View 1 (tube, rainbow, N blue to C red):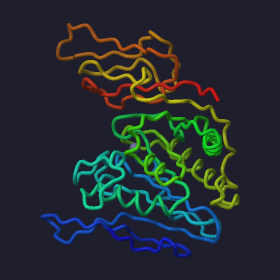
View 2: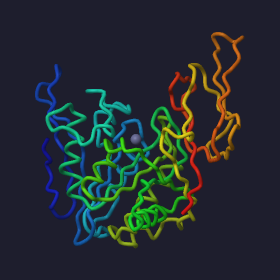
View 3: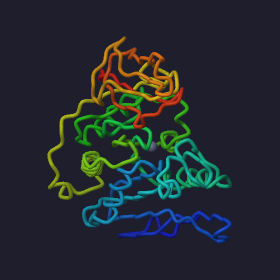
View 4: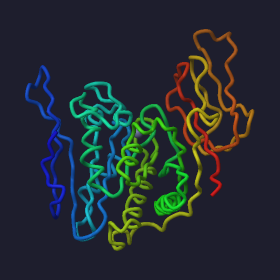
Length: 334
Ligand SMILES: [Zn+2]
């Protein structure tokens, strides 16, 4: 893979990371993953990515807009903006790549001689992240999930790091923020890549459902700008016209094997009983799975087993056994 801009160059550069791909239709094809670099004087080097999953559109919109609208004289240091990092998936509007079915965020550290998705992961791991001081990695729920929009950080037992990350999370200025307790398997995502390079990361879950939430885009764009200012990468004058930040309620999402995740135990139509943001208690019925092809069968009631807030819900009506239906989070005990 080849980058056709200079990561150490000054000013504004637009170009691409070129991934050779040879197909029946195009023997010498290059997949040209767009990149915009904005470099101005001393300051941190921030990497901003969206489109890791191609069906998550809010982050793609935010970085596409910032790539054109951020003014160079407001930058302190260097921003790298990649609004469609898994370009084949982003162009197809799918979570995984149509070229190899690869899920980029399950492909790290990648393989420079592997599938297209593994080669993109390897380029991020070996070139982009080690040349950056901080990663902003924008995600949404995608085609199958809807999330209450919020930024996220990964939980850690390192207290100084935890305090710094919570400060960055609050700087986003949205009403809600997430702390994710991730299992060790997340080492295959950008979380693992950042850990190996020794840099910190802010993520997000900005809406989802395969569409675009204007509220989540506005919240996400303002949040990214506030965080860039908090990190010293943007002149405060650049955010003078933003609304004041909200006080933030922080919720902790436990690991996915906990009772905070509900999976479908049968196949059918999932009818949720509660909206995103609802509070639940153990034993509460939160939905049911019906089988319209055998309407005389009793629906399967789905219960919460925890006390918490519904932060994520399946976006599609049809559910197969094993599909994730709901995710709850608990109030963070700081
Ligand atoms: Zn994602």
